[in-house]
Image (cartoon, rainbow, N blue to C red; front, side, top):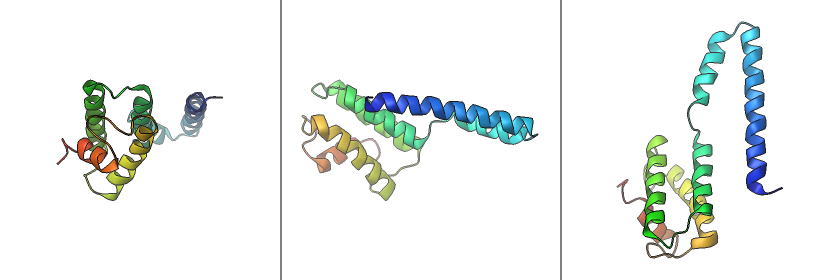
Amino acid sequence: MEKRDYKKEQEMENETDIRFQLDILRRDGYHAAARIIESMQGTVSRKAELEYLQEFVWQCCFDEELGRDQLRCLWTAYCLHHGLDADTSGYDNDLMELWNATAEDEAETADWSDYDSFDNFMCRFLV
């Protein structure tokens, strides 16, 4: 099974499990807890958003400036969603994970040629 198909299958199983657990909470009288969990399901987790960025990298061709700019904008939004400041450990760790996905196919473009230049390119709208 392909890596991406496996992830989708896992997500579907997780959603089914969450619905099951919510039903148990309601049945046992914990309606408030069930509502809190449901409201949290509407937000995008940091992990899920980073996985989306990696999927974007795997699908995009960075020969065109538009693709590179879209990636930078998605990264900027990601950092704002999750309160990441440039040159902090959380930022650096997540950017390195994204770089590793990017470097698999596009280690060099007109805007970056290594991790440091990728870092400079990606933080343009954050500093």
